[in-house]
Image (cartoon, rainbow over all chains, first blue to last red; front, side, top):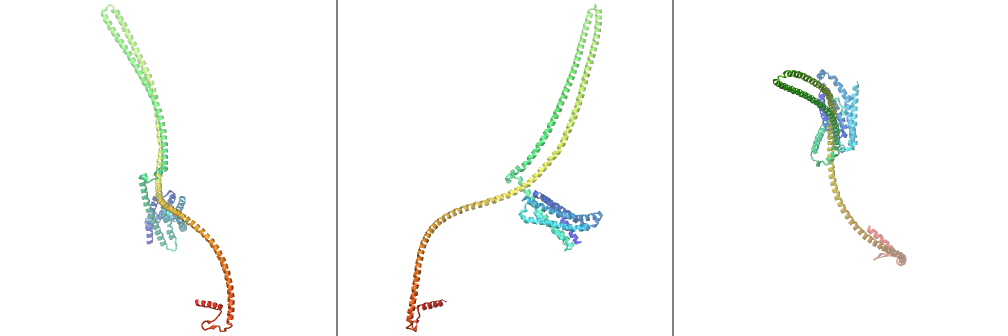
Length: 113
Length: 455
């Protein structure tokens, strides 16, 4: 129980930080050169994926904390599916976004030099 | 069943992809160095982002318990994103401050931005030209539209003029009718005048009748005749009046009919003109509607131009930055130039000194050559002297050899003499002098003694 509580708190903190980082990254994109625009966009998309993943994690952990609420609203079945989707699709998508961002950045550096 | 298999596989795929990304990024970072990545301001964010591989590795490791792996994964992720947030926040603060500064600089005079005019000339001016071209196009279209409108207005005015002319004709006709009416009135008046004259003459006649009684009957007859005439006249006047009135009525009715017809025609034409006007108005509104998208397009273009301007401002700030760097480089270059000049001066001084020294060395060389020549001469002299000496040496050697030979001969003679001397004295020792030996033996013994003495 203590572990799940700790994980829940850490996940909530991570979600907040990811969302804030996402906002700041969008703001900082204006100051970057246009050559790095695609790379930064890919990174932003990756962060969005991470935010969704963490949101789903928080939802699944809050389901454990308040099962009655989820059972009454009928969200219980959906949360399980969402966790599966997050683990199967969104997590690799996040990694792909990071990889694409790095590749784009490399190309941009080569074009600049 | 499928998710149970897929989830770990996808986790491993994620780790693999992140590993590839991290490897590529770190390789790039190693190749280019910290300074090489400066063109991407948020390069640290990328470095932090590729560190996201660590929590996934920890999450996938099987030698930790599941709880520890979960907590470790969440903690590391939170830590990484906390670092990323801090870095991004700092970047944002710094960049926004720089942007505000640049914008303030933009507001200042051109002297602090020497490339401002160039920037305006090369980047802003083409955009303004494009805008002006679009404005000219719109103005042309407006002119075209206004000329069409003017043409239509002219046509309408011509139609109005035609209507006015027709109205004038109508007025003229009405004047003519009025004139005719006046004529008829005048005629009636003249008739009335005649009637009044007749009445006057009647009165005269009546007066004369009083005076002339004889001709009363005649006069009565005449009066009756006159009355008859009067009646006839009245009848004729009446008939004339009725004719005139009939004629005037007919003319008036004709004129009215014509006028009404013309008015109806004009009304019809007016209706047609109104309908044409309405259609023209509709056309104008339609054209205005057609213009609305163009105006929207214009606004859109203006927005695009504003966006370009903002991008250009960013570029300008970058250019300013590079200009600052260039100025720093210029300063450094000027400093280097100064050092170079100093070095040049020193070099010139050194070269003059070198030349002086070279001259000195040449002088020394000349003197050396002279002395060398003297030495060569002396050497030759010495050689000749040496040759002479060698010759002398050879002579001396020959002389020495001869002396040695003679010495030999002398020693042989001495030995012989000693032998001859020994023969009478067998005892070769003396109390005062010791053992008496030959000179050769004595010298050999002396050598042995000297050697022993040194040792």
